[in-house]
Length: 364
Image (tube, rainbow, N blue to C red; front, side, top):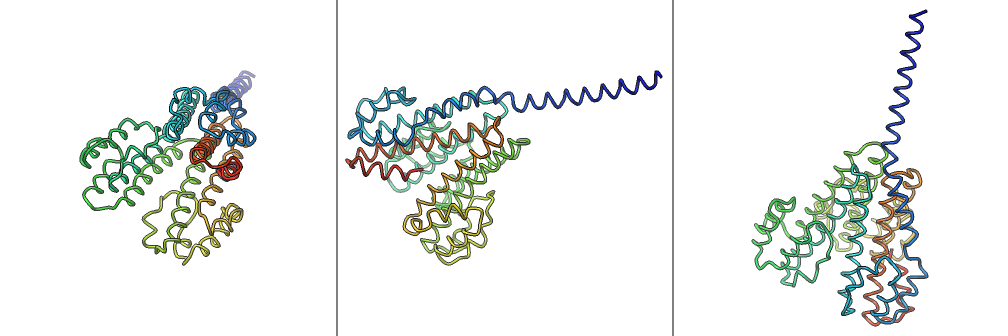
């Protein structure tokens, strides 16, 4: 009898331990996202709708545009605008976007917030590439800076530097030092340098995504691979328009995407590349804009941005307490800022409101 009771007690102990462990894992996995995701839902409700964009298109001048955003989250950034120039307002919008990243970084669980810090580094890559390209072209590098990214103070110093060697000193100790050294030594050109920057960046993103567990790994890995695919497809299509060969295009591509590029590399024209894409997972995206794409490749880029938002939104519905919600939100926020920047530029150029509405409606 004592033996039977001992077995039962041991069995019950094992069962309760297992249940406790599973409960702990569930709580550890999902509970940290409850509060931040609830805040993100509230923030999503404050994103501007099409009616609001149409009202902003009616602003007629930049001062009215700023005034029309006083009841939004952009008020704080725009309060520092005094000259009402396109450049000053764009900087204020960028500053607001930077604050969004910072807020998400603070809100998210420690185990996943670093991914948003890595996302911010894409602005570093863009800025470094823009500064170096401008300097090689003999232009004012400061004109091409966007005030975003963890390295912005260093990159601003790069833009203001007098020599290429000064830039190397500023980049010393960063992941981008080696490709820049190759550039100034003449072993690679500016275009290859830019590709190297993005390869380093996306390798960091993918390594981080693959280091996660369970649904976080699933979401982040797909997010990164989709972005790599978008970049590679746009690079390839533009190269086909320029008449480049497969051997010339291959070094421009970023490894790590979902799409196999070998067949696409060897087609002879843009039409054939688009036709080949029809049979891939991105076929529906291409079909949506096929006619316009043959005249303007930017329509494909916009379609891919929309597809990425929809896909992450799907993952958000499937994994409601996960990193998918903040990712979906930041993609929508970036799209909103792109639209606002487009309106600012068009108002600054004196474009009529009806035309602004038409053009901004195409921005995704």
